[in-house]
Length: 353
Image 1: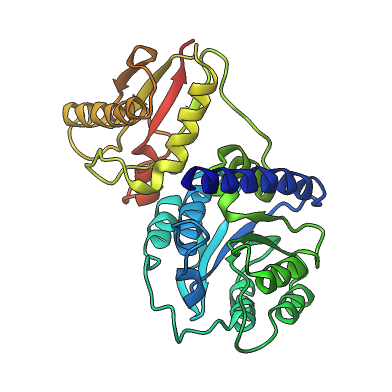
Image 2: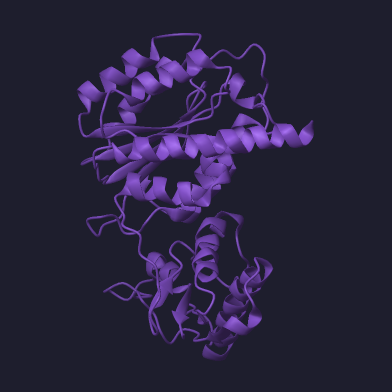
């Protein structure tokens, strides 16, 4: 019985992958300057799918992995303005501000894993309407990534609210990650209606993105207008974007898994690839200390890759300390430059073969 249920679920996922691919092929290109995660936290999001997973668990997993793959800089060579908004009730966890992968990861992690289910209705319409003041703070094109089961049983009509958002902010595109159960026909109808309002919109299934790495990567490429680019030639450097260690630290943070797993996938796809893992620091501290700290950072990434199945023989590590900065540790007037220092506390992969 359990095996039959598993096969049924996998068959559903395969069907959804094919459906999703066709839907994405028809989506008009829309390249964002900004993006907003809009995540439903109503009572129904803390209910189960047909399998043991909570809808919110899938929503958190997928949004974290998307965060790990967001390309930096954006298609214009600049940083995004980003936000993380919840609804039912409305809650702002990352106000509109320059995008920082680590901070967004922390904000996504802070979404509650469990909440009351009963007695918490879903004002989805007002939730979509809450985008108004957020979008007002953004200029250029904005991609909204709506993650919801589509259930709406209180307040204004969500389809009408989405239409009003498009009318007031025509440079917006609402992409939808559905976590609707197969029984939630009304919820799926609402999400589909919002998806059909704009031919830029992509609608995908949360279970598909959570189970299928290729589908997740395709979604990110389509939403953020990024072609598939992978390191393959000797001497090429793979920058682990968004992995900027805390001062005097070498530990791997959970929110970096998306970026690190992408590097693992590239190495898995190219079994002959060999890399040098290069660790770096900012200029605080002595040179001998920083050299050892940078080595520990490189070793931490090495250990992560080994844990994911990459052979030790394909990797070497080296620590360059503070000798190879990519940004200034100080400003023009000689004062401390925290952003520059953070960029220098990094690890890069150099393709050796």
